[in-house]
Image (cartoon, rainbow, N blue to C red; front, side, top):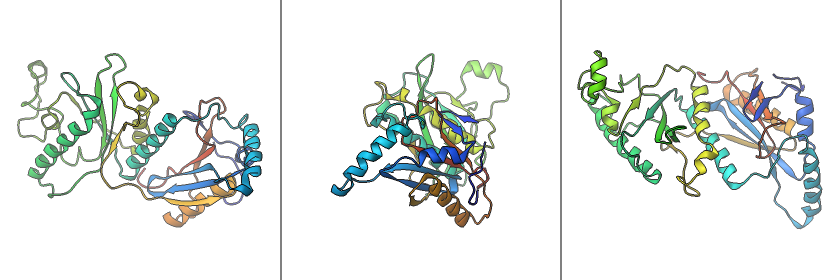
Length: 319
């Protein structure tokens, strides 16, 4: 997309792929009283161009009033049906962080952890997972893992649609590398032993034994870490805003450190912001032609966040 506004091309949840960039960005550029903030995450292969209101000063109040009027008119065509609540904003930001953390760390395996008995209170999940990791690293060091070496991960909780039983989904990258198994002859129940004659022996790196709370779901073969990271964020919905999650409570947890770096610039228009994002990606990645797929909120969606354009560079990295 050098200097032209040629189109890109499908729907993606609340967003739809931009077909006519000139028309879409032209509508967005009618919004006044703010700046367009460009954030580029090179190792995640994505960037965002988001409208942000300028801080008010005595000299800018009239301009801000005019900006609100212009924005209200544009929002009839650029969807923002309701004002975004703090709860919706928290969910939106959480989904972005989980997705980018997974992409940056190439987390391409999702393990499911369940509880055989009554699950612990939601507020104690962090402690349960923390204790799992202590046992896990002690076991991994017996397999040759260097002391102090730590893996990136991200987990999110889910309540079953039917049973409403709490379980965890965790994105990792170490399962195959460590030769892990989900169950062995030591932790398998009698019913499973009766039907499976190929259970790994005691002494295998059995994550089920390390977990110790219930069934562990073995990750399926998944070479597309980008899709997995996006899939994991679907659990970070407003459904988690029920009684189990206290206001302000964390809906997910990422491993310490290993977070993606970002480049940030500002622009006067959405179109200028997109060009900035392209130039930053090309400068960092060293590619002259890295065409993104661009998304904007669909006209019939319930998107309540700020006006935004998302750029998805699928070709960057191993994904």
